[in-house]
Structure formats: structure tokens, C-alpha cells
Image (cartoon, rainbow, N blue to C red; front, side, top):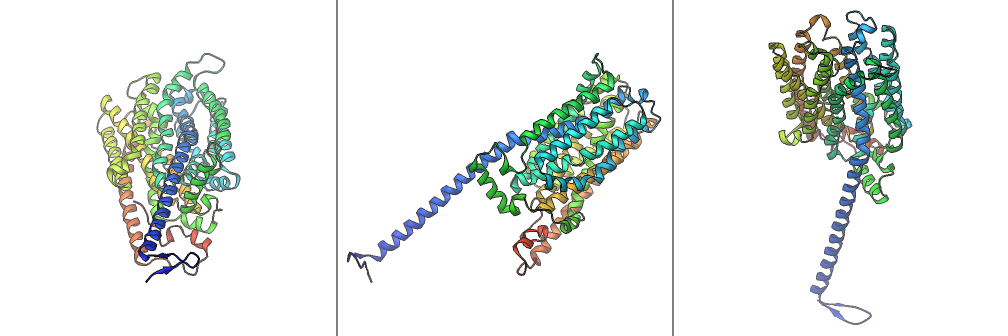
Length: 495
């Protein structure tokens, strides 16, 4: 059989026609592969720019947040209690008063972030907490100190959860966990440098000295950084002035394939409330509750614990860098710990074991060298959990805006609860052994191991259940399908 072309009358062999069609398909396939390859290159360029030019801006904000919180511990060993005539237990009360407003305003803050936009909301929060820290430099009584601590919790409530929420919608899902760990390096660096900086500020001989200088200078620098954030932080990645038009398009296309409207969809209030009680996410969030205990031990009580080993105030502030440095190394290593251990939950267990060992050594001996080594293990274990836990959560809530907002809120609330607990476990009357505080840190390490195992089992069970009995979406609208979150038939928890 042959085919005749009606106009020319030429006769074409069928084999030649099939060969031509095959060549055409190959050409189209190669063109598509070339386009995909080009889009991949442009996407990588966009992500690199966000990594280099935008992510560091919010990391520095996290650094100042940690330094400002650590300022209480450094102020204590610089004479805060004596100058304000604080009674026994007043310092513990002051540290804990930060958390009630911190927890209450947490869910509201992410709602405001969606309404106002990250470019305004995050710099505004940074400006306000910097102003409160400055005001702490001029307190003259316990009542004023307590008031400042209550007020400080309001603006600080939204920063970390807002930053985590943004990261989960600035990056494709596969990239979220590592970026969250990178974000928390700011917390570790803040803990590392807060002691030496506070030591230098207490040596100032100007119109403001001692612990007053710690609060005033650190608060003022934080306020200045808020102005930098206003210029550089975009509401969404595709709004970033540092990205080219092609990079914005490639990034938006990738994000919209994973997240409805690239993260711009409003929060679904009903599903938001349901996500607050999502059992797997609650279990992972409680890991941060455990992590915040050793972290707050180092941040708020580390200088005093070291001083009670027989060191001066200046030496204690300088030596606080040791557990802070270990924490920084742990968070950096957390970028790869999931790959090394093969899963998120194993990485959490590995860092929890270090926390258990460090707490056990602190309970077992009064040897100065051994106790300093144990504080370093606390730093490594606690900050390691901080690097692993939130990334694990963010990876599982990046599917929808509602899950992302709820997950970030629950995470930081649980972390704040850990901060409240730590505020009362290191009491002056327990010095120098602090058996109560070290014992509770030991229990926190054990609890983190239990939580990791429970979360892994729960996530595996839900994945198995969804595979056997997937949700019927045949009668749902596209909007309803996009908001299903973990109820979507294609969703699987990552553990």
C-alpha cells in the first residue's frame, strides 16, 4: 500500500512516513527536555538568590531574637538582681512572664502576617521587641522589669513562627527541611556570641554602664536591623526585587504545582483549628518543647551555672561561648543529619541521646571539667533537636497555607511551653548542683526519644491507612481538594 500526495502526485513509502513521524516526536521530546532543563537551571538560580540575599536577613533577625533573650542571663551575673533588689525567685518569675503573651499572641500573629504581609509584619515585630529591650535598660524596680517582660512576649510571639511559615512557602517541599535548619543557625550564633558581647558592653564607661548597656545597645541594634528587613524581605518569593522575571516565573510555577496559588490562598479557619489538633504534628512539635529546655538552660541560666562552678562573672560570660559553639556545630550538622541517619525521627533520637548523656553527667559529678563538657553536650543535643524537629514538621505542613500556618503556630507554642517550664527549674537555693534543673533536662531527653518513636509510628499508620482507604474526591470542587491537606489521597507523611 502506498500514499499519493494529491497535489504533486509523488508517491511516499509508508516506512518513510513512519520514520518522519518518529523523528518529529523525537524532536519534540528533545525540545521539551531542553525546556525542562532550562527551567531547572533558572529555578536553581532563583533558589540560590533567596538563599544568599533573602534567607540571611531573617536569620539575622533570629540571631538578634536569641541575643535579646539571652540578655537576661547576662544581666543577672552583671548585678541585675542586686540593683533592682529582687527577692528570691523574682528572676525566675521575670523570665517566665515573657511566655504567657508569647503563647497567647502566637496564632494571631500568623493571621496578621497573612493579612498585612511579611514585608511589613516581620520588620514591625522586630522594631517593637527592640524597643522593649531598650526600655529594659531603664527599669528601676521589679514591677517595671516584670512589665517589660510581659510586653516583650507580644512582638516576639510572631517572628519565629512567621519565618518558618514563610520558609515553607518560599521553597519547594524537598528543600524546606534543610532551610529550616539553616534558619535556626541564627539562634545558635546568638547564643554563641551573646556572652562575649555582653562582657564587652558591661565594660563601657559612658553614660550607660553594666547591665543597662547590655539591654540598651542590643535593643538599639535590633531596631536598626528592622529597617534593613523592611527593604529586603518580600511578601512572597515571586515579589522579590532580587529575582529576574524568568526566575520569578520558574519559582512560581514550581510552588503552584505543590501549593495552592503558591501560598497566597487565605487561611481556612475551620481547617486551621482542626490542624491544631493533628496528632502527628503535635508529637513532632513537642520535640521542640524538649529542645527548648536545654537551650533555655544555656541561654538564661548558663552564665549563673558556670559562675557557681567558681568562676567570676566575666569568666562565666566568656565561657558561655563553649556550649553555644557546640550548638552552632549541631545545627549546621542538622542540615545533613536526616541523610546520615536515613530519617527524621532517627536524627531526633540521636540528638536526644546526647541530651540524656549530658544531663546524667551534670547530675553525677561536681568536677568542673566534666560539668563544662556536659553543658557542651546539652548545647549539642538541644540545638541539634532545634535543627531537626522544626524541619521535620515544616516538611509535612508545606502542602497548604492552612497546615503551614497551624503547624508553625503549634510548634512555637510548644517551644514556648518548654521555656516556661525551664524558667522555674534552676533556682538560686539549688546552687551549685542544680539537681532539679539537670534532672528535668534528663527527662526532656528521654521524652524526646519517646515522642520521635510515637510520631514515626503514627505517621506510618496514617500513610498505610490512606493507601488502603484513600479519600474520595470525586464530588469535591478544586478549591476543596486543594485544602484537604493530609486528607488528600496523594498526601504521605515524611518521617
